[in-house]
Each structure stands twice: as structure tokens, then as C-alpha cells.
Length: 159
Image 1 (cartoon, helix red, strand yellow):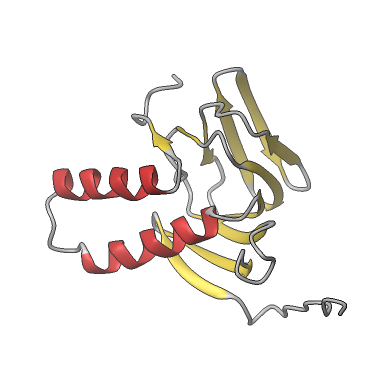
Image 2 (cartoon, helix red, strand yellow):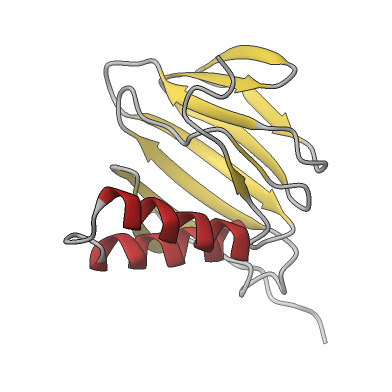
């Protein structure tokens, strides 16, 4: 039996609030038998994830709008509209920040899937953690990251 073609329009996909931004899981690992996931990320000005590493995932970014500074242990790159960034498997510590005055929009593909599940769990946790202390939030976020094979580093780790 052949697998049907999947189509997703601009209103479909799971919408999540992550780190002050809006993420949309366009296609999840549940739909691709875990092979990959595609996530549209809207990242507010000045925002972006802390440095982190995930040795078992490759991650690519295509910049749809804005200007984003990608930093890694191996250097940095300012990605402008229509730029492409590939973070290979292997655990390179990396992170990014939106340098624009407007939300940056990125199309992120992860191979294999799994980061989509992390984003889902993070969004759910952040909805319920409003009354938690900053220390408690940080500890619980680290637990979630470790569950998905991620290591989180301090914000200034790559400076």
C-alpha cells in the first residue's frame, strides 16, 4: 500500500506558544513515522533559544523573514531572508537570536522527529507553570530537555 501525500494549508498544524514566540508544527513525527518533523517558528525580536545540543537530531532552518544570528562552538553566522542553516547530528552546541525589530519567521526541519514532541511538552508545561518560581521552572525545563536527549547551556555559554 502506498502512503498518501500529505497536504497542510496555512491554517492547519498544531499551534504552540514557546519562549514568547508562536510555533506551528506543520507536520509532526506522528505523521511521518518519526522520520522528520517540520516546524514554522515565529521568534520575537531579541528572542531565541539558549545554547543547546542534541547529538541525535539534525536540524535545518530556512529564514522566511527577518535576520537571525546563529551561534555555535564553531563560529557564528547572520542568516537573512532566504538563508539556510544546517545543524548536523553530533551535538554541536548552538543557539540563535532574532536581530530584527519584527518577529523572525523560520522553517525548521528536524531529522528524525522528536523535537516536535519536546516543543509540545514545553508549551504544555509553560501554560501550567505560571505560578512556579524561576528556579523551579528552570529545573523542570531541564528535566523536559533531558527527556528528549537535549542539553541546555547558560545564555552566555557561546559568548
